[in-house]
Length: 436
Image (cartoon, rainbow, N blue to C red; front, side):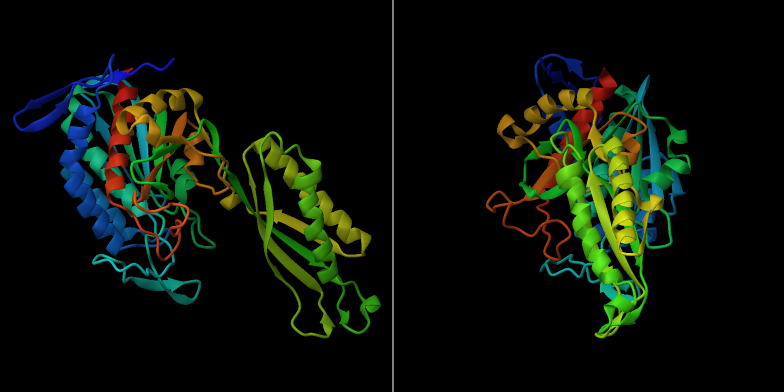
């Protein structure tokens, strides 16, 4: 049975302060007051960030923007974590637990097509090409939300029991080739040495949900992700005499088919699903030459680390045995530097969060979402501390979220009313956790 939380407010000297949340009848009015007070700043910050996006590991101006505002709030700020990451620690007026809140900062190599007064006109070079840069996944909103939550919590710090670690993370979309970054590097560089949290919260703005809707799921939510390369080596020969060599293109086709039987015939997908996708294949240069080798690249998505390890072994066995049967060789490699574990929500935190969500937006606007085969490196934090990651809708109520452009589209649109839903939800979860 869920227990509700009552949050009492105190207005003194024109500055908002919140008393310790007490278990009792539901009262989210103080959270609403706090969110409303920071709403103008949240929208202003989001628009500035949207007009000035930066790619992964290049969020220099973004980090400076964040750090200046956190310092202006009187917070202890640390910069340069995992290249451009920013963290700040808020110490409450009373001893207690520590909770961490995360927002990702990076944009995408996408040319914006929205007609907005603050649309991105930024261009840069990506993989040798000139590209547009856009916050096409809502990370500008994530940063603005967390800054708003920080501002609200600073105003109530004297009544808080414990500490809040604000984490602004770079390179969630993945560092450039040949570089490292993101949540894993933040952890390696001592993020939790600032303050080891007892729990961690993250959110994502999603076009697949209407504004005012919060999506959650206990346990596994988003897939673990792996990047693999398969090089098939044969023997070059004339295309008219395939028997004079070993055709790696034909072998590669057989391997691709064989890989699909791992999911469909070899692992128990009644537990959790898995996906093996070959996303690109390259081999040969001329119509009548069978090449020496073929390279394939692809991804594996899964929701269980033991199942992931089993899939990796089966892929290596399948590829090498198929190749050997034709006189070729196949080498399967997984890039450990970009391997992500699945996002798994702590059951107790989720169980506690659901009634809070229902109090904030109404029971009809809280929905349990299905397993998602997309990935997020928030999962690295979740392997260290109990965590909860939830979705906040940002598609206007008069539009069908199934028909609007999804995240990563050049037409991705963020209804700014959804920002305050994110602020309210993070505030409620944070104050509830620290009050226990």
